[in-house]
Length: 271
Ligand SMILES: [Mn+2]
Image 1 (cartoon, rainbow, N blue to C red):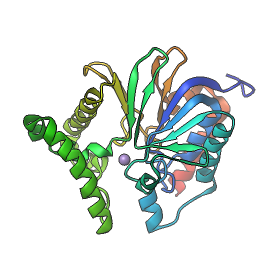
Image 2: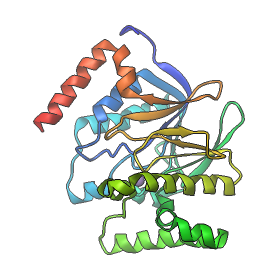
Image 3: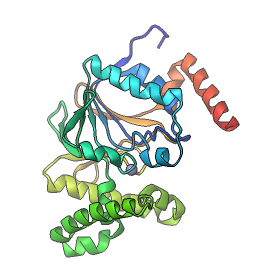
């Protein structure tokens, strides 16, 4: 691809866990990614802006602003933008069902792919309680499962009022590396259970910073990954085919952008 090449055009783009407002956010790499990718519909699958960190200490460099502007510009140029808040941008959950500057804000939505598959799109933190108690919930059945979902909302509100951080599955899993694999498994299981419950063919979520497309769970399980470590997105092509886009792989075909990437890594080491 030469520097004069047009961006890749996708039917749908799913992005999550960008964590703008934190030093870990790879906003400059995401900016490059957005220059090279356009889509008819862009789903922002939660934890786009990190509201908790910003509350503690304000960190908002120009590149983070540029990401927001770039996305809004894509909206003005005709892309449909849908924002599904996560636990880190929970403040946006007060705006569910509204439009903010051309962006639709919803808790969850069903997306139909070009080949007619219905995918539930949701951040995923809503299922943390389910994940933590997956075994006895499975044993107790559907009523308990729905109760756990409701309980999760209440518990997270109380924790927020008391000034606690949200219980973070990914942070917890990282601390307990031995259990990480089984927790990722329980998270996947909770999400596919929900997809099946609402009659969808699959689920697209984020939250655990682990990009995957799985076809072996009965319904499709798709995780968008993140823009803190892995720098991944999910693309839906015009024929409905889904693909994980990894910036580390794409950037190799874009020589002059690879240079920018190296610079930004050097900056990080310096910081
Ligand atoms: Mn999250």
